[in-house]
Image (cartoon, rainbow, N blue to C red):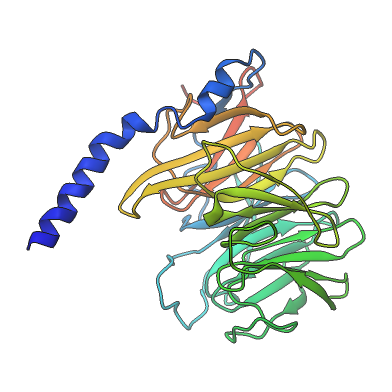
Length: 347
C-alpha cells in the first residue's frame, strides 16, 4: 500500500511540476536571439476526416516524386508485447494527396504484423520495416513486392537476420542502409541487389554506439544521419560507417526520427519526452540548418495549439510543409510555413 501511495504521489507531483520546468528546455534561449526564426501553422482537417481507413498508430511516412504522402499504418492494431502472430488483414500503406488530404491509393493487406518505418526512394519505390516479422521489404509505387530481407519471425544479428529493424535510407547508387534498432543497435549496409556489405555499431553511448537507432537518412554527400533515440542525439557517419560528428542539444529528449529536406539540406527532427514512463509531456519538431543551428522548435514548447502528441516519424515536401505521424493521437498532422497558401484550414 505504501508503494502504491508513493507512486501515485510521484505521478501527481511530476504532472504538476513539469509543465513549468519544461517551458524552457534549453533551446528557447538559442531561438530567442534569432530574428529569422521560421514559424509553422497546423493545417486543420488534413487529412480529411473520412479517408475511409481509420488511422491506427501511423508509424512511418514518405513522400513520392509527386509530393504526395505515403503513410505506414498499423490499421486496427497497436503496439503490444508480445507481438501478435497474425498479419493485419486490412490495408496498411496509404497514399494521401498532399493538398486535399484525400486517399489516393491503399494496399498492404495480409503482409505485416507490426509496421514501423517507411521510406520512398528516388525511383518511387517504397521501403518498409516490420519489427514483428523482423524483415525489410521493398515495393514498387503500386505495391508490387520487389525484395525481402530478413527471415520471417526469426531474430538474429548476422548478415541474414535483423532484430526489430526500424528504418531504411537509400543512396543515389541504389545501395541502402538499415537501422537495425531495437535489439541489435547497429547500422547495416547492403548493395542495391540486397547483398550484405558490412555493419557497424553496438549498444552503448560512445561515438559509433547506439541506444536504439530509430531512424536514418542520407544527405547530399551520402553521409548517414542516425536518430540515436535513447541517447537523445543524432550521429553522423560517412558512407563507410566512419564517425563524423554528433548533434546533441539541451532541449533534445528521445530522438524518434529525422529527415533531411533535399533542396535546402536542412535537418528536421522530432523527439518525445515522458517522465519515468509515467507522464507523457509530448513531442517537439526541430528545424536545424546545415551549420547545426536550431532555426525553430515547436510542439510541447513554442508556438503550437494542437493536442498532446507522440510523434513517430517526420517528412518534409519540396514546399517546406512538414508532416508528422502521431502514435498517441492516431493521426497525421501537416504544418505549413506561416504566410504560405494553406488549403483545408480552419482557424
